[in-house]
Length: 221
Image 1 (cartoon, one colour):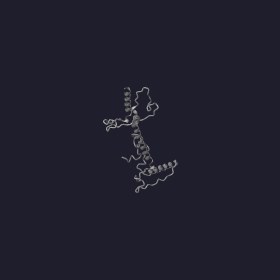
Image 2 (image 1 turned 90 degrees about the horizontal axis):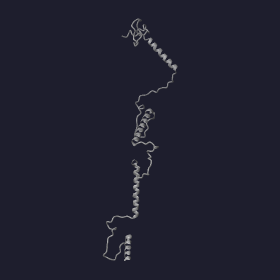
Image 3 (image 1 turned 180 degrees about the vertical axis):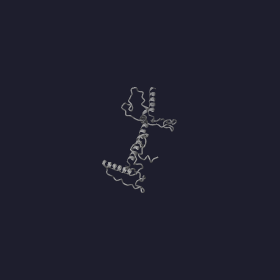
Image 4 (image 1 turned 135 degrees about the vertical axis):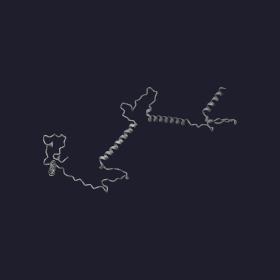
């Protein structure tokens, strides 16, 4: 009895460990359906394929975590281990100054406007430089070289005069003006007086702001 039970247990163990052997019987009335090879059985895979698939999925999860940590540094590092610590690279004492995106865009806009103003100022102050362009469709007409522009006389370069020449020129102009006034035969020029009173002595004095015509007062009413 003991040996029979041992043989039966051995047979069961062999059937369990080697399902590929199949069931052998000589009774034609015995039949059955394979559970794994039936039409509606789910797809199965070998242990090697299953292990490889698990490793690939674990690597994909790690890559996703690294990508999220890189793209979202504001989230921070979450850890429950009290012995883990680190220093923030951006908030350390020796970290360089950083600016936000709005400040960077505003600074770039200001620099672009300053460059445009500098270009306009250079174009205004140096018209001799001309306009440079690579567009063949752009053209213009010179205002001064146009066909019906008025003729312009060239300015001749005169030698610089010395101070003595300038003084003599002023004196000659003054003498000419004096001679012209003297020969103009103005009315009452013979009775003109150099006194600012322009009246006989003893009469009422004039105001200091009075305009004296020196001899022409007799004709002006």
